[in-house]
Image (tube, rainbow, N blue to C red; front, side):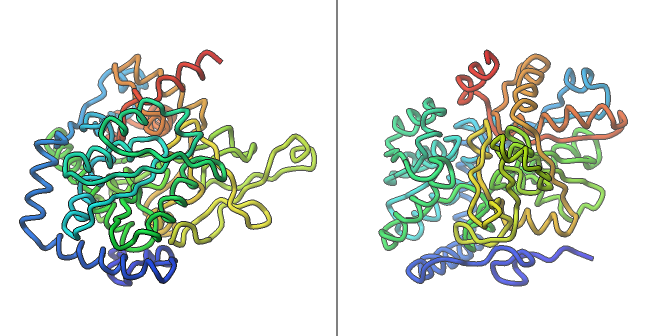
Length: 414
């Protein structure tokens, strides 16, 4: 039986998704949906986007056979989908450029965006510079401190970076402030949301713009190996790079899909962002040591219904990850639905495992991955040796590690 899609029930992925926003935003969402549907059917829009992706972003990104990593692990054959080689250094530019063109089509000259790791902020600032749009990027103070190179890149491109000092001062709080700005300036402003979450139609729009990753990877692996892969692996924060890789393979039943969340300091610590991990059973002694039981339950956050990490009394839990881009308490609604359908599996890697994966990939392939992508590499390091040499795996290398070098150096010294 074919998987249902959100086109069957508007804005929904099974029980997830929807539009949970103030009435003032409903006209803007309706306008965005209409503009997107028209753009999808417009050959001129598609041709312009394709031209810019090819001549400005540098697509198609290569699919590289990781020969030395494969030999080192001694199991499955490993390929890397090289989104780190895109202009700006990550997959985020695919969606940023598409949405910026949509905003231009709607006559919206002012863009607000949020960012955690900084890559979506850089992508948004870059797209706005290219198209002559005003750009304001909201970023938590914690993330500003650990992603200074990306902050400067945004500013060089002419964007205003507004620090967010509320809450945990990370991605969740940056999204809060971007939405507040959008509500206030909705007639002139487009909110360029960076991940496959938020109210409908954002999860669909972001997924569609990022699906170029999976479409390219599908054609590239067929050319390289003459068949489809056995397993796709990608990190999952909000979930845009993963859904971009997964979506073109959904109907290929022989292709398994695995999303890797941020295990942070470990599930038992309560300091993580693994929405799909089983909650730990804590004793009184654990709680006395400062360990907090957090559990993902159904909830509404930033306009969409999905799994949300919560404390026992139902408050949104503070999350932790060494990677700023995975440090988010909820997950995109399509990922929640794919998990329920058992079409995709989800696991996690800890900060320590991600750091180890950075070292392994750097030493074996000369590629420094972003800390986000390193979570996917970490899972492959654990899994590949147990699989036969006939197994083919694709890791979505969603970004490069330049932005994380300060964090990596400090963590490795410690």
